[in-house]
Length: 120
Image (cartoon, rainbow, N blue to C red):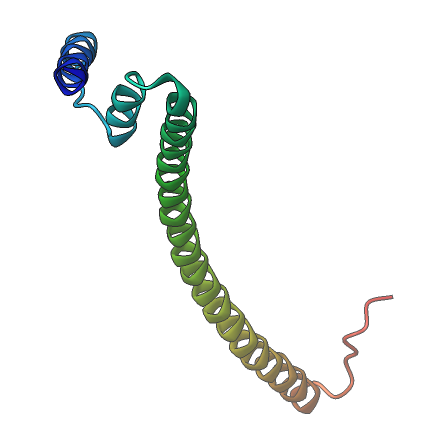
């Protein structure tokens, strides 16, 4: 008789839950349904179900954080590579620019030894 009562309670609870929500019942929902039958252990079972739901939510938010973090790292790696390339090109440009300005001054002094480059 007690088993029939438990089964009917579970069936009614599942029907109510299925009618109220568009999503399928979770493991936490099943835990709550089983807890409805026994009041003494029901409190513990409800707490277990509550913790399961909290754990599931934490896992989902954690997975989102990991995915977002990985995207940021990938983007950061790309930015680091771009930055290193720009530094390398900038150093090459500085070296080439220094060579050109030094050479220009040298040629100017050879061709026009009497003229000064200082503006006063």
